[in-house]
Image (cartoon, rainbow, N blue to C red; front, top):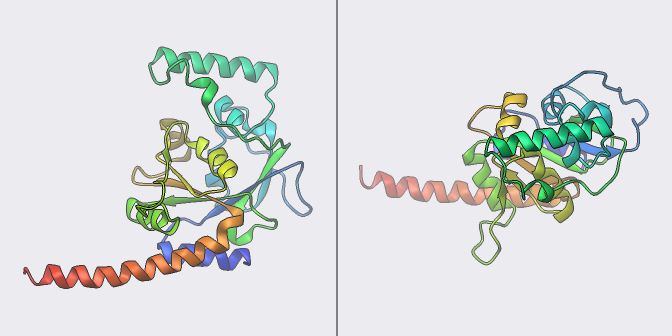
Length: 234
């Protein structure tokens, strides 16, 4: 499915007010894609920058957030690795993280030199992942379209800290994911408190949009039924 059409359908069906963004792990900038030199405090900050245009960010531009850089699968230089160790220790000291958790934080297996980011509608290559910011009501529809609301299926795992961990989880399982995020993600992205991060593997876009169309239509029918039932008590 053409990316602009896919972005439009996802936006319309979910009544989203923020554009879906895409990202692809790459060995370098594709032809015609701008190379970002912008300094950002975290990997997740790039997700919001990506709403404005397509760009390539090299691995080292993610190193200001050692946890995010590790989760994105980048090879960390010694200094950044030491920062990561110090940060994890601080998290443990603050009782934010248990010491045995650090080694189990998901990380992207695919090794790359950087990441191409941008609005899905303008994305020039095939996306590895599509990111969405959803309200709880939109997340309900997303969850149903993913098939995880079925009692015959396993419920969707909604991850937490770090928020970026949802990306390698979605990439590895090739299933839609959601994350409540973390305090770092909410600080660095300035995302509203009522938003949940949703991560869709890029290869599932067409299939997911078809399921989304069915889910939205089904919910519209059920809303009519419930509104009629509610009105009978007025």
